[in-house]
Length: 287
Ligand code: 13P
Image: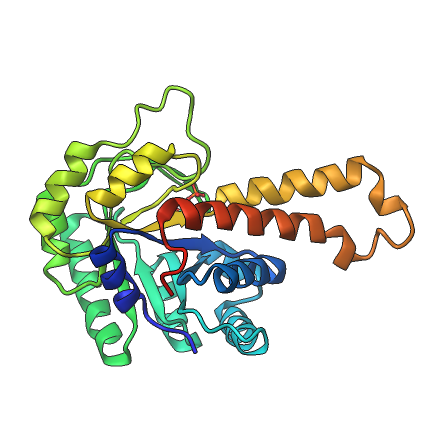
């Protein structure tokens, strides 16, 4: 059974750790993430971007696959299936498809429009028992072809959105998706502290978890971040392990071309990355 992230994150806030949102891209990804969460007894949030949903032929396919995998693999740790950076229409589709949590990314709308659309989704999610994440201040980098500039969230706007009754809030604090450039100044903890002061106990999300130094992650958790999103880092470790397999000519040996063999090193590499994140975020043993 899939659960909303509400309870997971309340526990994380109280216990001063963060639950990883690991984005999934295909069956191997999902299997690796679920197996690692189970092995380490960590709660986990499976993130699905609109692009990844489309790639997997649609949100219904994703929801059916994840639900079946949780059952067939005997997964007992809390698992949430969460839409990442959803459009308003994407949110409605995921609610219908059986996701347990959604993110509405209205950060590119003027604040009044973000408020209005978020308010409607708060109502629907409350009726259906899903958790809802909202975003203020766009996260930089490129996500599904949309390039954000990496704004700092306005703490007053954060409060406006938080007061609508969302369960989780993503606030831009200088974090960006993908690899960080060499001249990245780091997370802005003053903005994070100011947001926290305005929104109180609302669990905060740190997007762009790839490549943020461990000390910054720990500080962010101490200042109220209880969900950290990771996508690119798994893609990089999957690609590196697959490259190594091919470059070593293993696909040319025996039945090394069998996809179950060809994709195995990448799938193992994802497990390793997820394990590192769970250890760093402090979610091991918290299921
Ligand atoms: P990265 O790809 O930088 O890890 O960011 C993931 C993310 O924030 C998804 O919303």
